[in-house]
Length: 263
Image 1 (cartoon, rainbow, N blue to C red):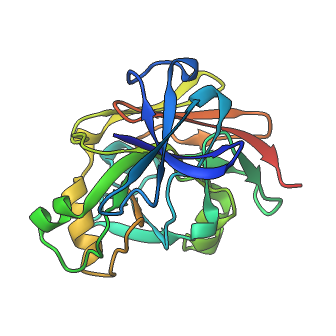
Image 2 (cartoon, rainbow, N blue to C red; image 1 turned 135 degrees about the vertical axis):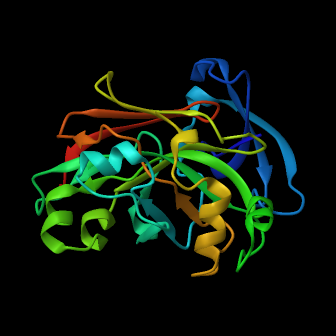
């Protein structure tokens, strides 16, 4: 199932996206349901809209976004860094999250903001704490596309990553949550103005998804709706005002955002 959160003439709702995977928006519909996606039972209201007639929002309410650095060998190499012996984790604030078609705002403090296309893992309806790999897999609700936007110059300057990764709008996620899919070997792509910048596969991650969820759960309790970003392939690069950044992940969809300066 593909679960979206969207704005329609009557307000804001969650719904299931219907139609063939990869079809254009005008060939898809979204069926509204009551409650939250992770409730034990959801009830469809019978209301449907053409996807092209609604506005998609970020599909999650995350208390935190846990990110993983240097989880692809070639990405670590392009920054002259070694692959860590265990997952290298850091946090992005929930206020950095935006949805599809929302605007990435470039802060005046940085002169070098870059894209990082990533697979996002969404935690399921029960807290995940100190689980093994099997428990980690059971604790996953679904997956989405994400962009770990980074102020690279500030990352180098600060020596730690909170400011560089934490600006408002620096975590696009979407276009929806996809459940029931195998993401162990899917393509991760980033295009800027239709030029391919990043192209990798999740099978090349140093630490796979169950390992990451288990590792993080031994550090902090993962709550329903929390997100883990699993690292980015090689090819990260600058984005500037006027650009359009498109992150696409096989079987999950396409996440597109424009770039502008901060008002």
